[in-house]
Image: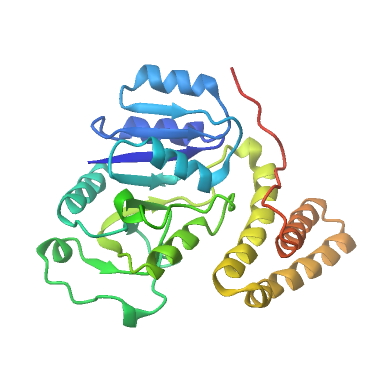
Length: 295
């Protein structure tokens, strides 16, 4: 058995859809980062298996996941983006996997369509096992990887010695950083190519907040990219990695100024601001708008 953790930020439609579809035997924790107390009351009154936690403010992805992990009562915790579709058959197959595969840090299903993008990466195949004889591994076509994202199960006991998400990261690269830490400690990360889910992509936030969310994504992606590479590979390597983003932002800002593209200009300006903040060792503090508790 595992607990399912969702992060919600103006994601009411997706959260309601997912909770309604998921079998009630799974405990569900929702970290409600948009501070919607009405949603908490609605979900907890309607579903006995759901607990909604309202933090004092929007704490982002890393701290949100850490809070959900801390509040869970099971060793296995499924961290799930809300803009996905995960059939109950996939949940049952994942439950079968975690009951039989004891030694793993992360276990993930895979996208139903991998032609455009995969939710996992192999950094160095020489360090990974690729010849499994265990029947569960063969049944679910499980392979070892270095990185998995968007929908995955963690084993809390396998992170007890190294910790969970870096709360300096508000959003982006938080899972990359977690996987990097796990692989450095020789923890196992697996994906199943038989267990599938659909990811809609960048649809977790209500469309009426899309402009603010787009600015936030632009800022935080660049802040987090530099921070991740600085933390794991050093300051000058991080400069090398972020420099193409810097050049792109400068170029786009100039073009937008010339052609009076105000919306795009704001986005690229946010990108540049995120880069400068990160290379100046300033915290990930950008918020395009503050959310107040909705009573």
